[in-house]
Amino acid sequence: MGYATEAAQLFVDFAIENQLAQSVIAIIHPNNLKSIRVAEKINMKFDMDTQWQEEPVKIFRS
Image (cartoon, rainbow, N blue to C red):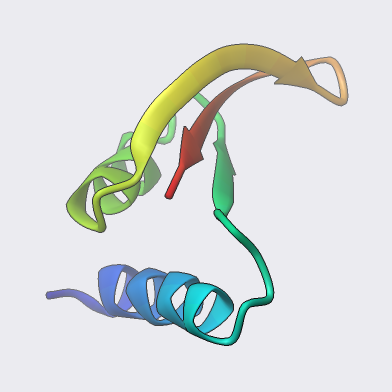
């Protein structure tokens, strides 16, 4: 597991285990394939395509 994947998994686990959130989202630019892969590796599921600050983004949810 790479650093980004490990850090992302720890963040999601911490938020869920400490009841800080029921789910965690990742807002990722569609061209950022490495971040999309990290989200997929930690079992985040694609939720929707949308826009954020007038830029296209993909939303992944834990």
